[in-house]
Image (tube, rainbow over all chains, first blue to last red):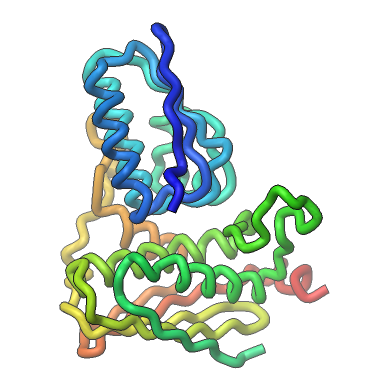
Length: 101
Length: 164
C-alpha cells in the first residue's frame, strides 16, 4: 500500500499533504512521521487534506495527535482542504470548529 | 432490489479494503450516486468515491465496525472470519456483520466530551460513536456469533431522485 502522505519542510513552515485514504491501515505510518515532525518543534504546520478521500477514526486520531503535539510546543497548525467524507467525519465529531475547517 | 450480497473475509485489517469496497458499491446501488468522473483516465475507477451523504454514512459506519471486530473481537490475530450480508433495497441498506471473536461491551463506550477544545480533543474511542451517529439503526448482540446490524435509510426526497 503506498504511503498516502508527504512532508515538505522549510525554515518557516512544515507542509503535510495527505492523500487517498487515511485509515487504520495507513495511519500508523503517518503517526511515525508525525512523531518526527513534532520532535522538531515546528513554528508552523500546514496540513493539506484537499486530496484526502476517506478517513476513519484511526486517521482522525493521528491528526489529533499532530494537532496537540504542535500546539503543545507553541507552534501554529492549520488544517485545510477537508471535503466530502473526511469533512463529514470532522463535523460529526465536532472537530471542524476546533480545526477551523 | 432486495437480494442480499454475502461475503466472507478473514477478520484481519488486511482484508478490510475488500469488504469496504463491497459495502461502498452496495450503498451506491441505493443512493444511485454516480462515479466522480468516469471519463477522467487519471482517476482510478475502482477508487472509493463516496461523496453522496448516504454512501458516506454507510461506508464510514461499516469501516468502524470492521475495525472494531479486527481489533477487539479478533485481537489483531489471524484465524477468524467475518461474515457480511448486505441487503440493499430501493430506500435503505441493511448490513449484518457476524464474527466469532470476543464479545464487545458496547455499553462501555465512553461518550465524546460535551465541550470540545484543544485540551479535550479525543485521540481514541471515536469509532463506535461515528458508526452509531452515521446510521439510523445500529444494534449489537454478543454471541457467538457476535452480530452487528447496521441500517441506513435514504431520505424520502432522495428516493425519487435516485430512481429517476
